[in-house]
Image (cartoon, rainbow, N blue to C red; front, side):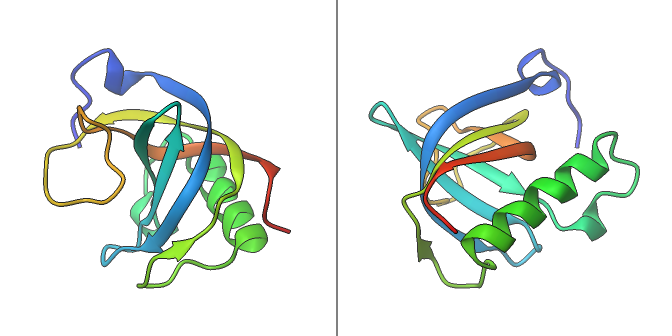
Length: 121
């Protein structure tokens, strides 16, 4: 994955509600976030896809925290409603029928940290 612009070389932090999430075929956890009338996708990659990643341990820790507190992702969508502070590296995606996308297809991919503010156990 090439990060050839300023948006994709920066870590962004947002506070939002997790509307729903699921495991994708590639092992990523796809999270649909909502706040202030708009959606944003955040992706948590599988540890096996992170060879050589600079923030590998924090990416793995964020996913481990999420799934231990909110439930493991499955191939079916799970509603949630938890409020989180979530950080991730910017990524420009393209339209491919993904749920919960921002109007401009900006994403947080990968998620580098997560703090659960409300919801989940």
